[in-house]
Image 1 (cartoon, rainbow, N blue to C red):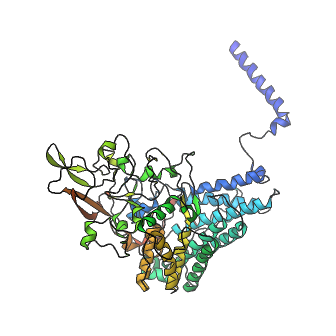
Image 2 (tube, rainbow, N blue to C red; image 1 turned 45 degrees about the horizontal axis):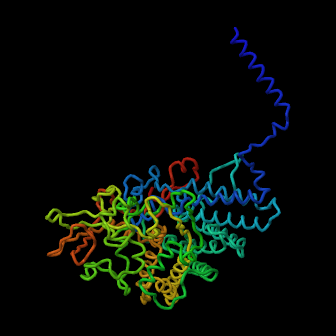
Image 3 (tube, rainbow, N blue to C red; image 1 turned 90 degrees about the vertical axis):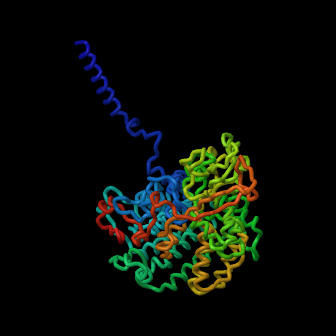
Length: 619
């Protein structure tokens, strides 16, 4: 009975306390101490700025993901199986097995979530409730730019998408929305860029934030894409039966209008970027030396020593904050340095680097085949780690095996206990150091990785920004539009500015040869910056470029007569080297191209949620 009595007393006490609290209005109106109400955010300039700043988290880690977009192209392969990359490279994507990029910047739901945040900001900043109107204009400009940026990501992956320019609330009558036409989407994004420019022009912006120059650069990119073959339905239909048989081609490109005027708009937009801001070493009238060219390209990729002038809009990192995007060196570096070799360059890419004299590399040329890594475009050396390349000091546990600190991706003869034996390089998949992380192509990335020996990639995170938009892209956009408009001298003048900075000779080609030269220049200059995935598609050269199996290199070093090497290092005095190009094992990845992959599939869940959506062709 005592236990029951105590229970009744406890209940009575709780009821009395509840009654007392209910009579205390101050307690009832108490606000959470760890939250800020929406009403409070938009009456306070600082809180409003914090809301807009959070929208930038939609950039995630930039392109510095463990699985980079480069590995869905002919730039690289992803070393580790089972990550969904092959659904793209083998054209196996479908609505049930949609691409698993693991990158919120490239996913439908995540992008629309960020767009909703920009819409909330724009609605609440339309009539600012705080006094600082200059801050309000800046925040509106940033929100406009970020909305345009997120929409452009959707557009270049899926084609026309639903344009949502308001923040839905729970009492909305209908949450479904049809896809807008490609042309409508381009116009919407361009309008946002123009408005962002007008709001941000003349304002000094912190690095990493949207700016007037960024608005111009994004507009330039969108208009160059819009003028391209893939989005001119007459051209696209002639090149693809999948597109020509689709009944909703307005979702994919322009079904009417003057293509020349679209190229003129693209040229004007690109020139606006070039006139508004400056890049890095773009006024040269002759090539720099090879050494200077390599250093210039490295300065750009590391955003240091003046190269940071290239950046128009970027995702920045600091060592004080641990983020996946700051571990690009660990993700992609050689296994012989205890790194993971994630996205390794293909031989297809390596072969597209010119010789120093501007001629094409050719395996049928005996001199080229004998020494494939000599006298190449200086950007090659700042981008690719190849067999025999000098690199950082090895870690303490490996240092004794390689005092020369050279990349070892081959098989070499050495003398062991008086006998000639084969020795597998430290950076191979037969290495004594983390062999499971070895390259499958015979190469490693150098670009975006600082060669400073004090930076131990295994442990130290980097502060290298991811370039979302940079000045040279606008130069290339301008050159491309000029070529399409028949203004070849103008195009070559701007292309040669880029080449002179890299130590390469002037372009002299004309006609189709000039177009091919331009496309290769863009490939080399913007490699690993997520352009190739989109460029090859918009040029409609994917069957040739992405339909080809990835190529790899096999390197073998044979001891010369009389050579007595017991500890390997690259040395042409002791070794004869042979280089054999072969296909990547199709059992690991069997690349093929199907035209449905010009546009990605909408996920089945999205189609089920929104019956107004139309699936892309081929799925």
